[in-house]
Length: 368
Image (cartoon, rainbow, N blue to C red):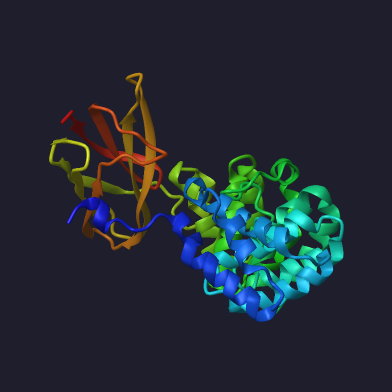
């Protein structure tokens, strides 16, 4: 069987012809006058060439094209449709409908987004309202942080992220993180991991422009709370990879690591694209007391122009007993991604402990 035969289906196939038929059938069930054939004709046109987000938009546009109702009445039908859809991601076409056609009805639209987010997420759609009426939107979303439904609480954080993937940036929040401080503060000890991940990602976004603000904020929080401590660790992951002393101190690894690395090696020493390397080494304590260690590694990737660009990878955060030692290892396949292309040449590998390079090795990529 070929690699093509075994590969996972493309993400865009979430919106395939079968799914479009499902949407049409469920719409007909809640609104018998629905023009299913016209919807399917509109939605399927040029479908193969569309990305997943374009397909989501196409569904929204196709619903609007065939619904003869005004905006408010259309929303009532779509509210009935939402719990009948068989995919949370697919349900995101409904918030898209709100963002596309409900800009004139702020209150109605925001309540619709609050409802629809419980079936998938309104994180992309709500950004259009934040961009058009930031103050009013933020005021409402601060109230949502107290909602009993964790999907709604998460929307307050995720929707206001300055750098939400697959969406445009919120320049105002990017420039002034204090705008969303009230939202984050109310969620800093949320019992839901789903919410905590969002808060951590929001703060990690902010570290790209305002690392000191994030550190000041987190240092003022009650880090003895396990939920808050979890958020802090994950929010500071980029700064921790960079060896930022304040960030390392927050997670208890700010002290210089009193260890030595033994037998640092990368095997095999020569690989081709598609093959794997294994990094291995031993960490040995040189002192009698226990230490908290953040152990990462960096690969200095060769660039097209012959220079290098380092990327840090998380390995392990651990407590090492006095005079103890532990073996570490990581296997990594060397293959191209949309965000990284590999070039032939010598690639350095550095091992970092509490932000400091304590050992190194290398491997070489050769042409087929």
